[in-house]
Length: 146
Length: 90
Image (cartoon, rainbow over all chains, first blue to last red; front, side, top):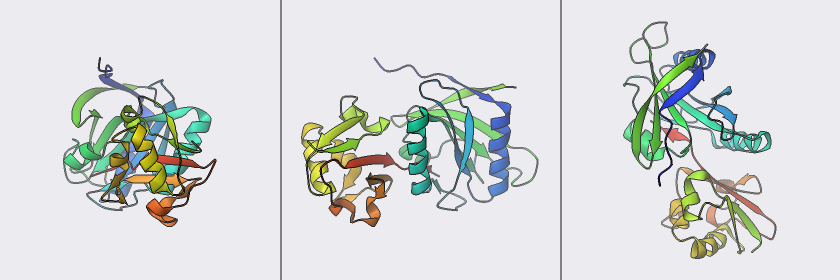
């Protein structure tokens, strides 16, 4: 029986604001990062910006050494990646084919922030969340907690 | 079976859900061949045309094998190999 997929991302407003701020700061390059939480909890607890080793307006990749250090840290703290976020700087906040083919964290919520409309300035920004499993994309609601 | 290979969640379908498997070999390539014999299909997710796949990072005792010989990276008793798929996209 396939595991059930939670259809909602519950996340604190401060984390959503932080992801948007990061995306605006790095525009026109894609920004990326994670929100980690206790293993198995599905509760995003602490946000960590990650370096985009590609420094590209169309691609992101976690710096391998930084990703490895995060992995080691999480194994000592009993945490896991709950959210992987990145920004799209000229396209909609929807997973690209590359996003889908490279999605490697099956338990994660994939949040995409699009800065296509307002770039680095305050203004319209799009934030959407998805589960990406076995090459399939399912959009989910974002329930922002205060 | 002296080299521990830690398996990321996304590849545990090849190991029956196990988080780590053990293998023997003097190089990373030998170890991967060895564990693939008991977990068919696993190696193909890490290696393509006898080179490490681009978006998979592999560490032997905390060292990125891209700096220590790739598939020829030496392995020995008690070593720990970590397979970490890159987090990337576009």
